[in-house]
Amino acid sequence: MQRTAAIGLRLSARVCYRGFSVRKATGICSSIFTSSKVTAVNMNSGGKPRVYVTRRIPKEGLDLLSKECEVSIWDSDDAVPQDVLLKNVPGISGLYCLLSDRIDGAVMDAAGPSLKAISTLSVGYDHINLDECRKRGIRIGYTPGILTDATAELTVGLLLTTSRRLAEGVTNVKNGGWGTWKPMWLTGPGLLNSTVGLVGLGRIGMAIAQRLKPFGVKRFLYSGNSKKAEADSLPAEFVPFETLVKESGFVVVSCSLNAQTKGLFNKKVFEMMSSNAIFVNISRGAVVNQDDLHEALTTGQIRGAGLDVTTPEPLPTDHPLLKLDNCVVFPHIGSASEETRIAMSILTTRNLLAGLMGEEMPEEVQL
Image (cartoon, rainbow, N blue to C red; front, top):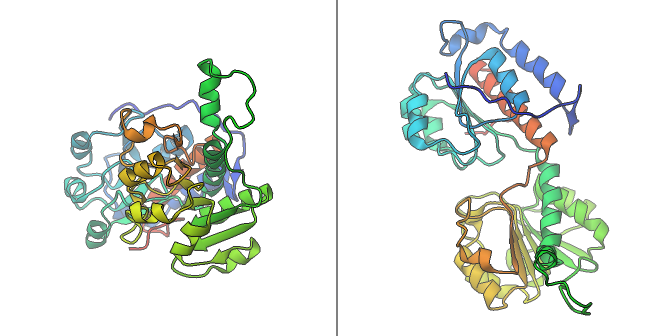
């Protein structure tokens, strides 16, 4: 077995996150493996199911998993190479993965029929071949809800960094560009009396809107497949997508990636937007045609863009978007608070253990 990572994260005696208790989670996971269904999974000689972990994860989630399973781990902060993944999965019962891994039919073939459950440390699961899992009866766990608050906080920060040109300000201070006071230097649109359009008003979209409301936003608009009752609390208006992009000074994308949203923001859509509009994407990189976004930013079609997600990830350092002052790119850190990542790692473990036992997962993808 490869050396398991000991990550230097410390947790207080009791950490609760949106009602999720680390101590409580440990107890639940321990009780799962007292079930008589333990014979349903592939065991090693010591009576524990074999699990492969594709990355270093927070110590709390790894320790919990190691108590109940024989764990092999790719001991690196970087993604496991696909050939290494294929060599390490034969005979495993569970796979603990991340969004940047490619879990396709080849991986499942290599693992063999012993593979019962896959658990991803992410809210997204488009990196997993759902059709193959459905055919093979492999269950999938994921981590929605638990990263809502951290992602919403990051989104507000990204929006303000973009609209108020904070990154440009820091660069000027460091590079000697801070000279005499100039009335219109580094100015940008404010949120007071603005219209914010939310493409995707799920848990994260609502959390973003709730955090933006105290800034004095005048109108919230949202689009999607159906009207949401919870939007009345903002209040937010349900409008056609075209109306949203035309009337919003800030367009925030938090929808899921699917066939309908892939490439949704393209040249035609950017041309509908105000020349003073700020575009923010914390959804998936593939929701945006990045060539069209670059054109919109360089021609003045829109004012600026803030991205926490790109295609590919990481974005090459010579990518045209990174050369623009009016484009702020974060390295996909929406959920990157210590408390959230620890809680995510434990939930991912809970999902995997429940899947191995044939029990109900706390958060399961419905296939």
